[in-house]
Length: 317
Image 1 (tube, rainbow, N blue to C red):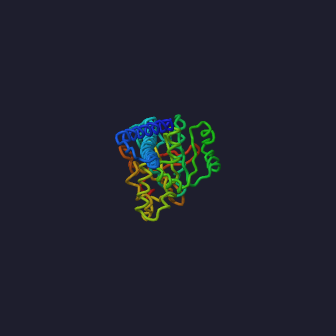
Image 2 (tube, rainbow, N blue to C red):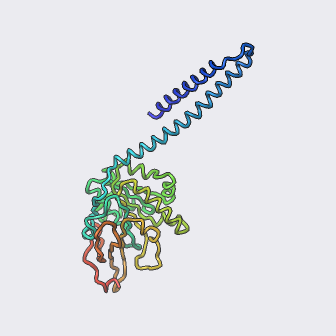
Image 3 (tube, rainbow, N blue to C red):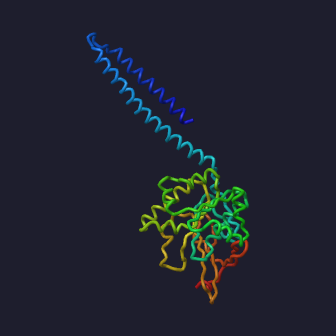
């Protein structure tokens, strides 16, 4: 359709310029003594003038049309993806939703922070599978996991990701941090196309730590994260970002550049207590939510994460 519009605009511009030149030629009649050679020169000049004006005007018009077409397509995608702001996206994690008023706020950006083995990926995937269970389309973006191995590992929790993928509700995207950096320059790129085309409602990026390693200083890291969050907020997704972070290590500054930009921070602890490793969960912040201020024990078993009773103060000391 845009090609036909461009062709039609080109024809109109061509006709308009020719008419103007014909009028000017009639107004200024050449002297009778004008030689044929001079007439040929003027004719050639007129042709060149037509070509130059046509090229200039057509170029500007086409550029304007192209930009409008891009804007219309993007606006159309955003309109089609109806906002659900104010609603809640349940996680399916037993005991956690009661801590946060029935789940994460729709279209929010949420950080799941914890050390190695704390359960970040399982938490994030359980959130996605709850979406699949409710008929929503979800996207899992990973910088580190290999698809076949990841699918096989998740079977032990009772999650058949291949089946979910075949149903069209679960999309696995193995991406590199460099591609995400490129996406910022493109203003959305491949991921944005997937989100709009499939009407994605829940998204996980696991983990943002790999992306942050591309930047040498805190300022560059923060600017890149702000750019990423700005793009994500246009997609109307409820997003979980995992990050490698030890909540008990005061020297660990991994979340310092983004803690004020995300809508919530959930901390996962995996600590040794009385010669035994225990897992704990804490909601550090969640905007617009009267969330639990307690630290709770949780366990990982078939079916995923289950949050239990609140931890005693002596256990976390």
